[in-house]
Image (cartoon, rainbow, N blue to C red):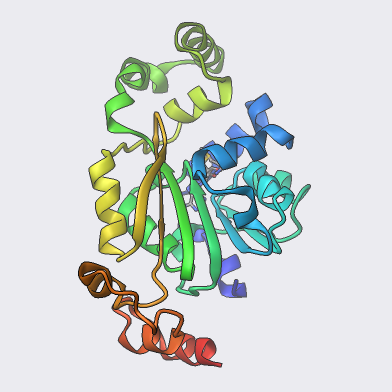
Length: 278
Ligand SMILES: C[S@@+](CC[C@H](N)C(=O)[O-])C[C@H]1O[C@@H](n2cnc3c(N)ncnc32)[C@H](O)[C@@H]1O
C-alpha cells in the first residue's frame, strides 16, 4: 500500500466517518470479539477449505475492528493488510494487526497483488457500491479470490420501518429499537445498528452481484452464504480462460502471467506490467 493511499481518507464525508467511529467505539457486540467463532464464520461464508488460506497474502477491506483479519491470521495467512475509513475501527484492529491503516477504499489504485481479498459488509454503505467494487477488484491478483458480502434486496423488509424513523430518535430510543428488533428477529446490537445507522444502506439481488463479477471477468463465481449476498469469484490467471472454457479446453498458457498482462482486458498500468513480469 502506498503512503499516498494511506493519507487519503479526506475525500470521505466527515459525518459518515464519525458515524462509523461512533459505532466501533460505543456499540458493543460479542460478535466482534477475536475468538475461534470468527474463524468458523469466515469458513462458513467463504465456503473455502481452511487450507486455502495458508501462506496467502490477504487484504481485509473495511476491516472494522479486524475480527476477520484475526480469522485470516489464525488460518495461517502469510500477511494480512487491513484498512478502514474509521480511525476508531483501525485503532481496535491494530490490537491484532500492525498492518492496519486508515483509508477510504475509493482511493485504492490498482495493485493486483492480493491472493485473497475480503470486503464483508462494506460496499452497501458507499454512495456508489459498484465503483467501490471495481476499486476492490483491482487489488485481486491473477488467480486470486475475492469475497464480498452485501445486503440482500429480498430481506430488507424488516429494516424499512426503522430506517424511516431512525434519524428522529434519541440515542436511547435507537438502542431500544435495536433491542426490540433483536427480540423479534434475532441478531445482535451491532448488526441492527449497522443496518439502520449509516447514511447509505443499498441492497442487491444475487443476479446484480453476479453481474458485477461477470463484468470484472471473474470466474467460478458463486453465492456462498445466506441470507445476505455473500459471493466469491476468482480472477483467471489467463484472460483467454473464457474462450478456453467455452470450448472445454484446458489452456496450457494459464499459468503465464505475461499472457494475462499483455492481453488483459483489465486496464493495467505500465508500472504494474513491469512489476509483474519480473
Ligand atoms: C458493517 S462494518 C463491517 C466491518 C468488517 N468488515 C466486519 O465484518 O467486521 C462496515 C465497515 O466499512 C467501513 N467503511 C465504510 N465505508 C468505507 C470506505 N469508503 N472505505 C473503507 N472502509 C469503509 C466502516 O467504517 C465499517 O467499519
